[in-house]
Image (cartoon, rainbow, N blue to C red; front, side, top):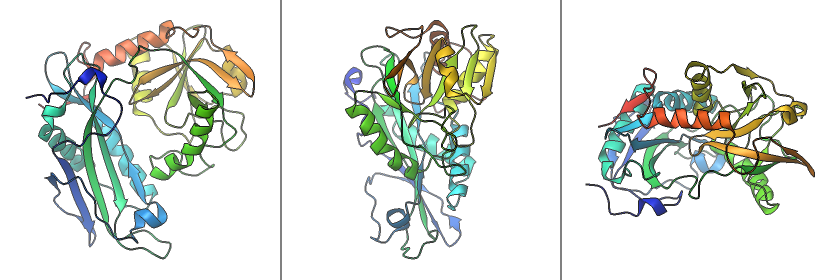
Length: 340
């Protein structure tokens, strides 16, 4: 029985649901894990997560498809990315198969919180892991906790999709050979000041350049870039210091195999950006946020697609990928995990 919620007016915020999943790592092994009603976490003041920021997270969604099933979109890629992130942070990786089973358990236990099809809302899923035992010397923790909570969230674009204006940032998002390619909490802590600076200046997001030469496009604080050339080629920046977005990888596949577009993943010199016809930011929450204008220290780069709506190629990509996610278009094998 679906919860009595005004699904159309939900914000992207936290609402405590009935159950969450918890598993603890101790003495070199993960325990069996279980669902719990307790939304609180009690830790020592000296826990590794507080002292040296040993934490990582993922984000994915569950939702109803057109034919009435509750599903998740490519959760195996979230599981694999969190596995890689944990290894980079010297945390014990949570096994991929157990990650997927935990997602199934927690979504199924909170099925009443999954918004109805067509509402635009979804059930956001937040897996995360942290060091939990006392650590005072600079070293990895010995004990960890893996948790998943879920919360219903509203549509990203409540008033319809409108292109945004972003700025070229003077900050670096990640260091060369650093942690830009993993989903560590510390990366997001570092991005908070630059994004607030951008918001105070009237911009929706930052465009970060590569930290070494500051001549190539990297990503924003929380999304990968896609560009469309004037001849309809999808171009996405390639770099060892950007996060491998699941949405971006899916869009590349959709462009090539569903829409017959040419796809290039390569370094993108910032000097090339004015030559593109369309620009977008892609990620779990919005799928694609169209970019109408980039401000480079007062110089405006305006894309031909304009400030009123998505460009034609970006719209086709958005419609096709969301159609696959919602069951209106047949998905590639293995992309949709059915919960019930």
